Image (cartoon, rainbow, N blue to C red; front, side):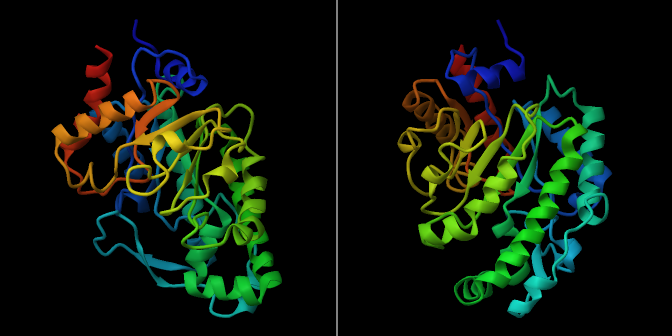
Length: 332
């Protein structure tokens, strides 16, 4: 018997037998993501075409920091991210001048409106959708750039903490605004919890405390929350007991492999497909083979077939369809 999407996802999280492995892919929507109605319509059409088991609402990469004065533009990047033309932080004292934003205004307000429209288009029980939220440290890097962020982290820690506190407060206000938006949960993205960027001690000092504040604020009614740990050498073990149901990283394009995730994590793992080497550059036949391998590797339990981040906007539709079809074919 075919399960409803929520039931399928909940059983996958618990490690129970499912009628088929859940599957979902997501992407940025450059241009459309600047207007709430157009963004919502793009997501609805994408879901109508592929019928994913859940929808990831992935707004502009910088949506949460434009309100501080950041300026950006899309210049044709394949991942759909907007290039930053003007940052906000140029000296360490600038961190102390940041003030929490009002979530009903600006680009954050547009996102609230987009979710309202999606709640009208989707029945949350039948089509769960989750809102992307970037970690405070990831937002801070957008404001300053990586080099300056690391410099201030190592020379002006107190000033940086003041800025991180303001960013965290804005993010908490945003989450509070989302309580009645109809979302099933959030996709929380960390970008610096990786050994090629920071030491573990640095991330535990400047990343994890703020992550914990946000993850601990997740309403109990949100039943489907994910954490995406970016980077080539992600510190997955730091999030083994996080208040989320799904752990996500680029298992095909970084390390560790899917079956080497932290053993302490008891939810589902989302992965098995490479966003670039498979979905963007390979063929449907390759994707079907890789998908079968992932399902076999995980014993068809605790798995959501997906990739470690947003797929390139130029990924062939036939490749996306192959990812969608393989779970159905394998179930049969």
